[in-house]
Image (cartoon, rainbow, N blue to C red; front, side, top):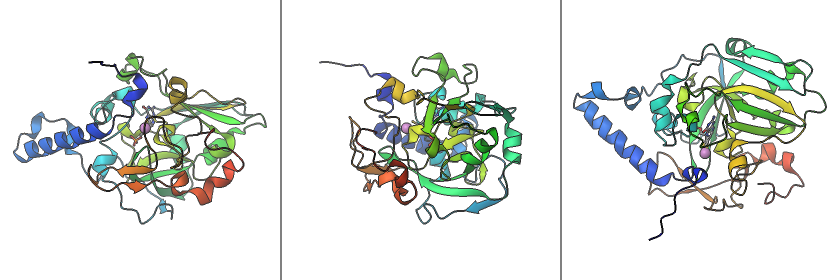
Length: 320
Ligand SMILES: Nc1nc2c(c(=O)[nH]1)N[C@H]1C(S)=C(S)[C@@H](COP(=O)(O)O)O[C@H]1N2
Ligand SMILES: [Mo]
């Protein structure tokens, strides 16, 4: 029998069995908790459905994705991809406690007039009243409907005054193998990197997210701030950002660097362009169970009206 060992990028696709295992484990933990033997259980197994973080104030609801049934808080914060804390879907919730989110500084540099650093407290304190909730899906053949809380990234970046040479923006996650033990393994070319074109970056739907379900973001979801680009596949949504750079050239991004034939730079949700190893025409909604009917995936994840103009004239099969 031929046994082919999995390449690092193939781990990413393995979601069906892990969700079943994750749910089974959670059932066992709940049963154990009910039987009064909870003391030996990891804290996340008994997660507070209201969320553990500080409540966020001044949230304004937006119409995007409204009306879709939300994925449980338990799933949003328990079923994650964050390879810095392990490759299993349950690993980030178990391991992200080692991430220190205060103090936290973001460096903004590259093609801009006033490069500099900004602390998380200044970022949070500088958000005007209309902080928002955007509800949307994070698709990758599986999806969730998540009430993310954040603000348009453009609002933060404008103050650094990008020059006319700035055509792209590059993002980097914290690199600290002591806090992020997954970085001790050469799974990805650390730190995790992502990138957007300048017009995508400045689009009002491109958010810096600081919370979920009205509470501060937990570590496993990319505390203290992460990117959410609602019309793109999940991997574009880089977590725990420490650096944002304006660049002239298209930046290197983590998954594209590892496996360019599978993960493009654009990564726009598109039911007509399959991933080489699976169809992207339909998505399994997390929380509905493995045997539930899948949902048809929508072009640009349902945000075509807002973002299709960004890609006018581009061949979306080539620029996947
Ligand atoms: N730094 C970092 N950011 C990351 C990842 C990661 O491994 N490291 N995984 C990406 C992938 S593949 C997905 S699907 C989303 C998952 O976000 P969520 O766990 O909040 O749903 O985060 C993205 N951001
Ligand atoms: Mo992903």
